[in-house]
Length: 273
Image (cartoon, rainbow, N blue to C red; front, side, top):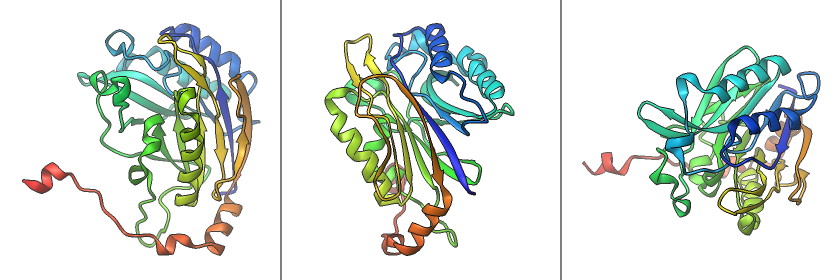
């Protein structure tokens, strides 16, 4: 593990128009490829915007045109690409974050915390498991938007003898402008409390419901200090290198993790039976 080059793609999105958004993302990524980056991160529901029209817009997991597009892009650009889609799978619909590798490998995380104020639980099923992926020796915990508000779900869960479960938290979002301060604050808080990098990619523009998005896509280091920070509502693409050596050194010289409280998550329904 040495350095991981991460590229953030902050963009407007065409409402419920996957074909147009695939063209748009291709344009935004430009000439990004494996010679310039290791990982490209697209916003939450980048093919449609944050739509509750799950029945009409969710693509079938076994034959998703946008997932096929992600596979082609990852192969042709020779780097990993991550972004979430509305997906139908096993009789349910999910807000699914895909992690697609150049060799055709696909891993995914289904959003755990569904945004009830936007009726998301009425249209999508809740994910049940966390997902940690690995790239160039870096371990990344996957998350989607509203998950960011729930520190227990995103907390490091070490297993002896390894004190850290992951090195970076990746969060893709459609986070509206009126709540931009919580977005920015929570990205930094998750980095500080978990002693790891945080990668947050949001969208800009307005969606089909008239909601405005301010962007504020950021990469935050393990001290909570921004490495990429554009408090702007305009599109941008930027790449930053995450240093494994700097992360390891900080964890050694400021070992707050040694004083962390042990905890375990249980299913209350099972516990009470």
